[in-house]
Picture 1 (spheres, one colour):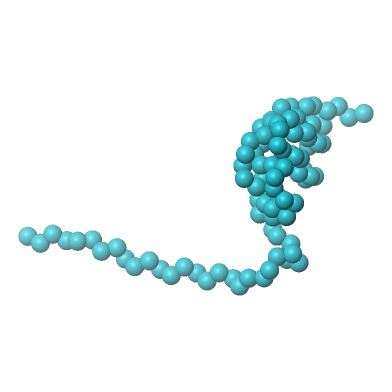
Picture 2 (cartoon, rainbow, N blue to C red):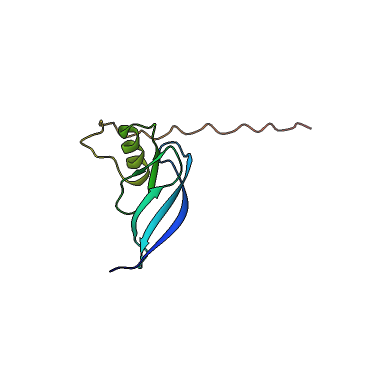
Length: 101
Protein backbone atom coordinates (compact mmCIF):
# COMPACT_ATOMS: atom_id res chain seq x y z
CA UNK A 1 0.00 0.00 0.00
CA UNK A 2 1.21 3.48 -0.84
CA UNK A 3 2.08 5.74 2.06
CA UNK A 4 0.08 8.99 2.12
CA UNK A 5 0.66 12.34 3.79
CA UNK A 6 -2.10 14.73 4.84
CA UNK A 7 -1.56 18.47 5.19
CA UNK A 8 -3.79 21.32 6.20
CA UNK A 9 -3.77 23.97 3.47
CA UNK A 10 -5.62 27.18 2.71
CA UNK A 11 -6.98 27.58 -0.82
CA UNK A 12 -9.14 30.29 -2.34
CA UNK A 13 -12.43 29.69 -4.15
CA UNK A 14 -11.68 29.18 -7.84
CA UNK A 15 -14.44 31.67 -8.73
CA UNK A 16 -14.22 34.49 -6.18
CA UNK A 17 -11.12 33.85 -4.06
CA UNK A 18 -12.78 33.40 -0.65
CA UNK A 19 -10.35 31.36 1.51
CA UNK A 20 -11.17 27.84 2.73
CA UNK A 21 -9.26 25.38 4.89
CA UNK A 22 -8.67 21.96 3.31
CA UNK A 23 -7.09 18.68 4.29
CA UNK A 24 -5.08 17.63 1.26
CA UNK A 25 -3.76 14.08 0.75
CA UNK A 26 -0.54 13.45 -1.19
CA UNK A 27 1.16 10.12 -1.92
CA UNK A 28 4.79 9.38 -1.01
CA UNK A 29 5.94 10.86 -4.35
CA UNK A 30 4.16 14.15 -3.67
CA UNK A 31 1.31 13.60 -6.15
CA UNK A 32 -2.12 14.93 -5.24
CA UNK A 33 -4.57 12.20 -4.21
CA UNK A 34 -7.60 14.00 -2.77
CA UNK A 35 -8.92 16.70 -0.46
CA UNK A 36 -11.68 17.55 1.97
CA UNK A 37 -13.01 21.03 2.75
CA UNK A 38 -12.98 21.75 6.48
CA UNK A 39 -14.49 25.27 6.35
CA UNK A 40 -18.24 25.84 6.21
CA UNK A 41 -19.68 26.94 2.88
CA UNK A 42 -17.10 25.34 0.59
CA UNK A 43 -17.11 22.30 -1.67
CA UNK A 44 -14.38 20.32 -3.41
CA UNK A 45 -13.99 20.89 -7.16
CA UNK A 46 -12.90 17.72 -8.96
CA UNK A 47 -9.50 18.07 -10.63
CA UNK A 48 -7.03 15.23 -11.27
CA UNK A 49 -3.81 17.07 -10.33
CA UNK A 50 -4.56 19.79 -7.76
CA UNK A 51 -6.78 20.61 -4.81
CA UNK A 52 -9.52 23.05 -5.81
CA UNK A 53 -12.40 24.50 -3.82
CA UNK A 54 -15.44 26.66 -4.59
CA UNK A 55 -18.18 28.32 -2.58
CA UNK A 56 -21.39 26.28 -2.38
CA UNK A 57 -23.32 29.28 -3.75
CA UNK A 58 -21.57 29.21 -7.16
CA UNK A 59 -23.25 27.32 -10.01
CA UNK A 60 -21.57 24.40 -11.77
CA UNK A 61 -21.30 26.55 -14.90
CA UNK A 62 -19.49 29.35 -13.02
CA UNK A 63 -17.07 26.84 -11.55
CA UNK A 64 -16.42 25.12 -14.90
CA UNK A 65 -15.71 28.45 -16.59
CA UNK A 66 -13.37 29.53 -13.78
CA UNK A 67 -11.37 26.28 -14.00
CA UNK A 68 -11.08 26.65 -17.78
CA UNK A 69 -10.00 30.26 -17.44
CA UNK A 70 -7.33 29.53 -14.85
CA UNK A 71 -5.92 26.13 -15.82
CA UNK A 72 -6.53 25.41 -19.49
CA UNK A 73 -7.70 26.71 -22.80
CA UNK A 74 -11.47 26.71 -23.22
CA UNK A 75 -13.11 23.90 -25.14
CA UNK A 76 -13.86 25.29 -28.63
CA UNK A 77 -17.08 23.25 -28.76
CA UNK A 78 -18.54 25.01 -25.70
CA UNK A 79 -17.34 28.56 -26.26
CA UNK A 80 -18.41 30.99 -28.91
CA UNK A 81 -15.92 31.85 -31.57
CA UNK A 82 -14.48 35.29 -31.58
CA UNK A 83 -12.35 37.16 -34.02
CA UNK A 84 -8.68 37.62 -33.27
CA UNK A 85 -7.99 40.83 -31.45
CA UNK A 86 -6.60 43.61 -33.54
CA UNK A 87 -3.39 45.21 -32.33
CA UNK A 88 -3.73 48.26 -30.15
CA UNK A 89 -3.32 51.58 -31.92
CA UNK A 90 -0.05 53.28 -31.16
CA UNK A 91 -0.16 55.93 -28.49
CA UNK A 92 0.59 59.44 -29.64
CA UNK A 93 3.96 60.77 -28.56
CA UNK A 94 3.87 62.69 -25.35
CA UNK A 95 4.33 66.40 -25.79
CA UNK A 96 6.99 67.80 -23.52
CA UNK A 97 6.84 71.55 -23.19
CA UNK A 98 10.07 73.40 -23.82
CA UNK A 99 10.98 76.51 -21.95
CA UNK A 100 11.89 79.48 -24.07
CA UNK A 101 14.67 81.75 -22.84
